[in-house]
Amino acid sequence: MIAPESVIKGLRKCLKAGVNPEFPNQGVPQGGVCSPLLANIALNGIEKIGEFRSRGITYSKCVRYADDMVYVLKPEDDAESILAQVEEFLAQRGMEISQKKTKVTASIDGFDFLGWHFYVQKHNGKFKSIPSVENFKAFRDKVKHIVNNSNYGAKVKTIKLAPIVRGWRNYHKYCKMDGSRFSLWHLSRRTFKKFKKQKTINRYQAIELIKRAFPNISYSENSFANVKGTKSPYDGDINYWSKRNSVLYDGSTAKTLRRQNHSCGYCGLKFIDDEKVELHHIDGNHNNWRPKNLLAIHNSCHHYTHMSKGRKDQGFRKPSAGKPARSDFTERGEA
Image (cartoon, rainbow, N blue to C red; front, side, top):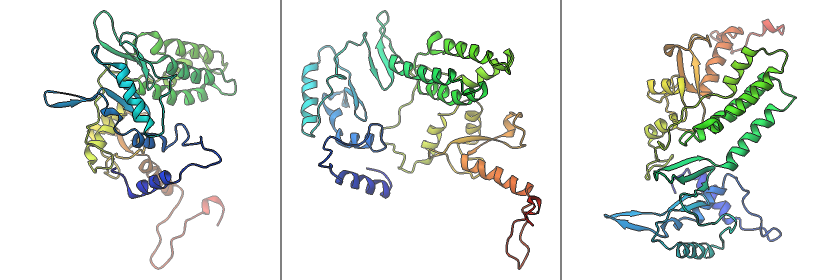
């Protein structure tokens, strides 16, 4: 496994910890940090079940993400045989298949996987994917909970809605998002009516708030670029991962990143970690969105930039020779 020594050491301790006799059924919590990693270790090799070779290339019928997996079979394949091999593989590791979640279905009927519903159209045989019913319902409930909360004003609701809507649209940006349902027309219309009921908000202000609460994210169906099979975030290929992480951003941020060759405009380092990329307005005017006035920088660099400006404004002075550095607090009345 390619990972920092601290991660490998922590993982070994987790595996050696064993099970508490008083709680034999208690394990890693669902959605925990170690859960997908331990699932990958335990299920490593299960994707080799049903492999076949064609023209010297080995193909797998399994698509797996942590402990969720799908086997794509041809009409001549024996589904019961594949299922029996999977059950045997899991039994050797002390696990068993969830009968509620396991089923054999036709491609035209579709199946849910990782929040998407995949299916093949009957009339033309094209492969399509849309947000699953459960995923959309959970997202809609989150939006309604914020919109119907009387403790928040329209502006606060906008601030809370924007990241949720942006995250949901980014997650499904490679799906078929046509129609009023997935374009969120009904949700935005309902939210607009709620905003108009607030006496301090007029019609035009409500429209602007709706645009901020439901930001537009462009989508391109089935155009996702897979990670190269030999690549890892810890392999040292900074250029590859920096360019790939930059795809997560759109609009002015994406254009600025391409112009800067996916490097921070302040420190010059690549964007390789999970730190957020932010836009910095060089002249300090946040209404000036000209490309020459924008700089894509790390979140920490952005804070440091504004912190440096604040020090100059608050009267911090350079230390003179032979004297220790001391901040000037005379403006605060602490002299």
